[in-house]
Amino acid sequence: MHPTPLSYVHDLILILKTHQKYIPMKRFRLQRFLALALILAFAVSVRTATAQDGADMSAKEIINANIEATGGLKAWRSVKDLSVVAEIGIELPGMGALLINLESINIFPGYGYTSIEVAEAPAAIPAEQINQKAYYTPLEGWVEGAAGRQDMNSLSPQQRTQFQRSSPKNELDYLAYADSMLIRLDDRDLEGKSVFAIDVVTDGVSSTMLYDKESFLMVAQEAETPAGPAITYMSEFMEVDGLMFPGKTSVNMGGQNQVITFKSIEVNSSVTPSSLATKAGVKKMVAPE
Image (cartoon, rainbow, N blue to C red; front, side, top):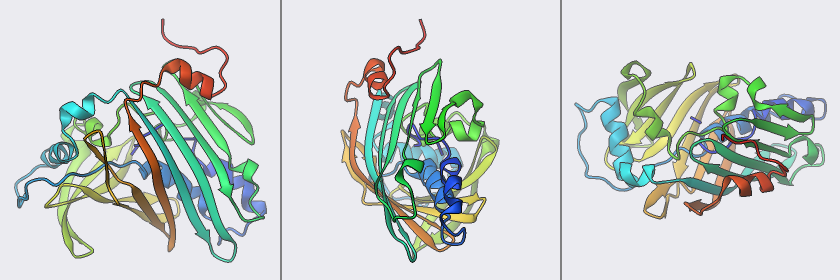
């Protein structure tokens, strides 16, 4: 998912590959963790909805129910901008804690800025190799890190969708998908609760979203990664201006866990393209006439 999803930084695999000369591969799969978590971090859920069996519901009907349960279609479509501050925490076995500050701001559609900065890291991980920022408008975009600045157009479609968002909630985009891209799978049991399972194909990549059958909240998402299967859990939901967001997501992959804690979420804070350009250090913004 793209939460999104917000304006995400370039695939951090490219950043953290640099560290392989510092850190044993077996211990340090952080590059895959961060890239996956940034894709999945902002999957949105929940407000209590009327419980129903849902046996005859299609994938799109379940997605519509999630949208209504988390604030409603009209409210979500009225979101013009979304700002998020979060902390990414990973415990590296034998090394200590890695804490990363994430700030992401999006104006829908077409404008975004993301900053990632190391707050705390083991001595073996150079902060300057992880710190990164990304910026885009409808006409230009770039990602900047230790290796310099890279044009966003040079990235793959999958990489670009990690930080270019067309809407504040992934399910809004799914409504426009062809039925063949949204497949309802057999219901599952997740930690003692029955959940709907929907397979979603985005840019040729498949993932499975799990929605609680009573509340229609998204409780988890499964995805295949280069390192194997990964699952993201959503919890500690918060209400912001009548819309529901997860306050915490936890990504488990290969037995290693990464926690993303959302410190603040702002909706329609009147951020402008010009203010984003200033934040990104852009002297002259390129925008449509």
